[in-house]
Image (cartoon, rainbow, N blue to C red; front, top):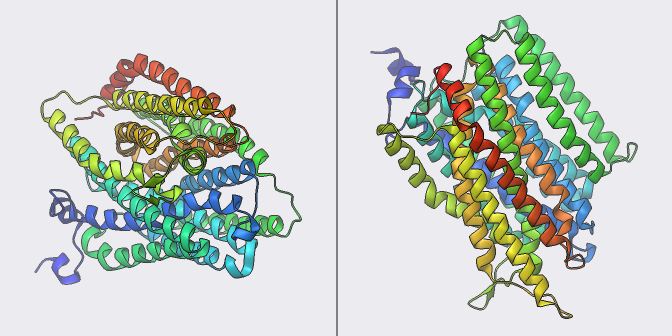
Length: 515
């Protein structure tokens, strides 16, 4: 009898070789399910935030102005991804990947419980819940992606395909979450919607508890540092957690003033500075070989491209969400759809097209003509640029209506824009996840996943800052916003196109290929 048969836990090689999940390792199915439920909770909550905070007090909201509410949504989304860097560090230095996922899920569930209780305990419980979700997601998000990469030690097109399937799980959860919580939140009660989002995370925890040991085995359980270093990391992590608790208490009690718009603006510059300093640290003190330094250069360029992409894409919960509510005719067959349902369009298209993209990468890879990661990024930026050009046309149509009443446009404008954004996302996001696991030096893989998610943090902050520009009383700002967004994407497309060959050569010289 083998050791794995005795313990019920498969070995790492058995985990990798068991391809019972649509031709992929069985553990991918477990991670698919956990991430699906976690994204159900995250995306189920996110689109409700700006609508809830800007709703009048009589309607159960907080009555915040759009600029403030948009900035808060941006800060929340940015912090979720920003927390991925320390979350990856904690996994690398103390908990390991699997334990980080488990404890992160528990903290997220507690965060949703706190937001649900804000019906009783008001704003302090609401904002405490957001902070807990940030901390928990920082532990869970980068480390579950890192384990997906570990299921494909040989890399190649199969890893890209695996990440595309995993990405489909993310969007299955996002689609269902926004449909369920959107309807409950807008039509039944805000806190009913918040509670439904929290139930999703509990389902994710149950899935992980039942299947992780049998399908992941030892993958993601080891910590590649000595016990003394682990204890040091534990002390640092708990000290930082204590500082966060004190800071939240001071802000919540009003002792420390908090200006969301100013914080969002300064945070954008701060995150970019942190990334630059981190890359400088790796080059000088990271003990990297020349080949590893080349890989870090490629990661840096992909980071900048991703940050530009997400700065546009992450306008979904703010400016595009408000456009759906204020300027879109949402009546279909006599039924007026909740505004938040438009947030699920992107997820629906990802579910529909992710298998197509996964099959495409494998098909091209087998024929030796697979586009490089930089080429895929270039295509993603271009398609997102076209998507926001569509929104420019839609906003001009709203303004051209004129008159004393607000002109609303067809649902097809937003639908077409989300379709193009989705095609761009599938060309960039799962490929970016896969590239981080391929390019990152092994001892920094968790932290590099954190760096990747910091690009999304920048996008959330900018998306939150511009959210107030979608306002029935400021119609002239809409086309300016969408024009600038589209042009920035087209400029980034041109720059990436010029860098495709140099970056591809650097990846080849470092023995990192895409097929």
